[in-house]
Length: 135
Image (cartoon, rainbow, N blue to C red; front, side, top):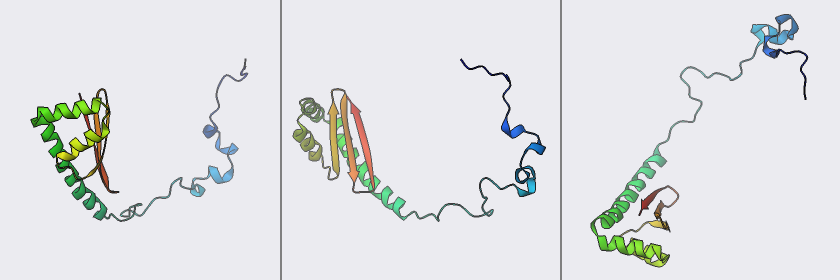
């Protein structure tokens, strides 16, 4: 067991000034911990929204195609039944075929569990959208 003969903790930053080294004790010689910038300058590079605009346009395409799939599932009980049945049978080829039959032209990856299906739509190296449906 450790015994502290001095029951109070001494904070090193609260030492008297005469115990501190001279270069720390005088405020004029202190250095700033983080340099400051000029008032109107940003530490970040200039903004270029070209890639963002490209991502947004491609994401709009993804959302349109996902909407096709969701509309088909919502309006066709037979399609929804077939999709769920093939997923529960672990028939990946049939699940992919059903999703493509809606008119999906994007790359996608469908994974399913006993609780639902997860479809990840990808558009090259730009962006993607994950749709998780429970059943």
